Amino acid sequence: MSLLHKLGIVGARTLAKAVYPRAIGWGHTYGPSVSLDTPVPVECAEVTRYSIGLKEFLWSLDGFTHGTMLDLGPVSQTTTSFFIERGFRACSCDLLRAWKEFRTGEAQLLESAVGGTLTPPELTPEIREERFLQRALPYRENSLDAILLWDRLDYLEPAMVAPVVTALSGMLASGGVIFALFNSRKPGTFRRYRVVDSLTLQMLPANEAVSFQRIFQNREIQDLFPHYRRARSFVSRDQLREVLFIK
Image (cartoon, rainbow, N blue to C red; front, side, top):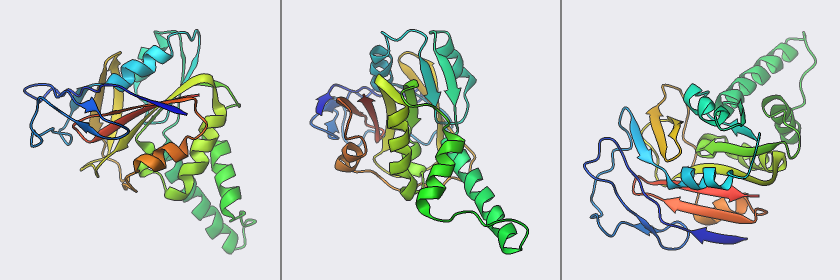
């Protein structure tokens, strides 16, 4: 798998000026025109940022007609409309909420089973994973052209990260693209994302009880997506890494 590293640019409505980082290998960027102490307000009520990752994501999808896009964050009418206007069939699954509801349902089912009213569910991790994936992601193999993964893997229960990525990889068609975000430091608040236009992402704090699980290192990210023909990484000064995985 070859890794192509390009320039990344981050912008925010509250910044006096944009920050222009440059890529130096996988996961290392420094802004030559800005001091290392330049504050980037990632925990504001609302941050609008220039996203070169989004730009490249859309460019990679330019040849698709009537493709299917899956958004794995909370439903956003802005994002949905953006893709529908470009001829995509837009699907959504709030991955973290689905996992939380699944775990709650499993616990209730087990409690009922212990009380003698139901047959206890299978408790092996493999069967639990399969049951969740069938319920939350009922998509056929090679049926998706674009996936907005956002930073959901940073918050997902560690044991479920690899199964979810494997399932998504099977659902993604040849030439399809996953757009993922990874936090380089623990964010102060859980965020949801909106696609404003072809160059701009909007980040908004979400009042949801979601626990940050871990920070992924460069090698761990690469190991999660081993069979993609290309991966592009863009790291900005707000400690948010944008990564494209092209199947």
